[in-house]
Length: 293
Image (cartoon, rainbow, N blue to C red; front, side, top):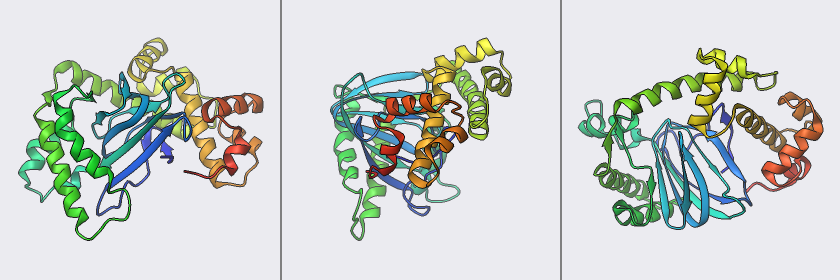
């Protein structure tokens, strides 16, 4: 699943505007070594079918293995990356709560969907095979994965029914958010401002001072919070983001590699080439001509 990032807000349309449901698959490291920090309006379910991958959700990181799931709230920062030298084959299910609503005064929206969306009700994130929820949702998730392509007449009704069934089981294991978690939400909202700043200025010389100023934090405090909340340093995030932009442009533009590197904030072409190879396991020129999976 390769798609354009906007800071860390994903701008790809998942499904269609009138039926926002989509299924994807990923293979680490063959298709990508990592899918960097991002968020989107959809709830996401990640199912690891074979192998293992590291999945971070806000400031938690999980090593997710065969047959395990991760449940991700809408608008929640998360990422996927390779675990050491291991391979991992996984699936993503994304959907918007709006497709399950029946109207303005919908009771289920007010009582269940909105509290989950606003993180007032917190879903369990990491579902191991031993988790009691696993056996209840695994058959439904595997069925939903079959609707990736070539839907038959009536399938949309089945998808809506199964998503509702899925949330019904998940609700039994939700917890009410406490004050500490509410504070985390405030911090993440401030981090969004800085990451949006990266989106608007990635081609320029971005410093820790300029990123911290956007969130109204001192450099030391902001750097500590950023690392704590995202699991990576400011430098790592900025490099990953610039590489994502460069990779997207390599796929879609005939512009010279050197010009793309410079316009993405890499002043040293050799450093860009090394960093690109480390992330994508191929040179920029090879990436440009490799068919997209």
